[in-house]
Length: 168
Ligand code: OFO
Image (cartoon, rainbow, N blue to C red; front, top):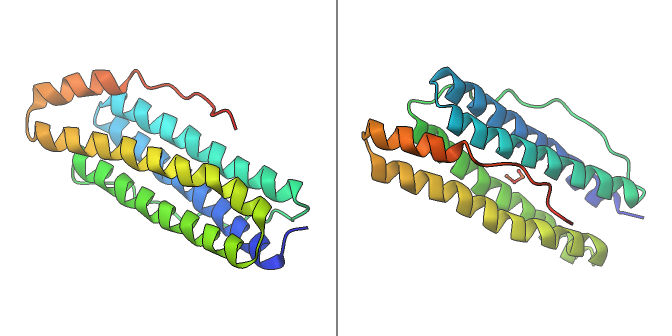
């Protein structure tokens, strides 16, 4: 049976993952509005990944005999001054999520909750990949600067991303 402390922390994380999904959905809308449909596709995949993360926490808590409680999801930012600003916001958000996962891991270690620490190991690795993929997009956009043709090419590239549910 999971501790009340850990139950609360995982419920908060379910909310944070749902917020991530919501934030990236706001970015889908932003990119669609600017006719950057490849970027919108990339963010749609990001949204699907976040829903997957939320459900992974949801199922784990339930499996451990905890009670899942759902709170309101905060309204996300909806407008950015450029595609680069939106992607930088996504990168900033991923760094925040990484710090949350690290805090959860610290709690699991403190509570000697080995099952949860083991479960969280997947997220520790996932965050390395999450930060890396968004960082790559930020770096490419920075290189492009004001090159509209380059942005068009990059948009075509971003359209190829597909969601594959991780095996775990
Ligand atoms: Fe983007 O990793 Fe979950 O929130």
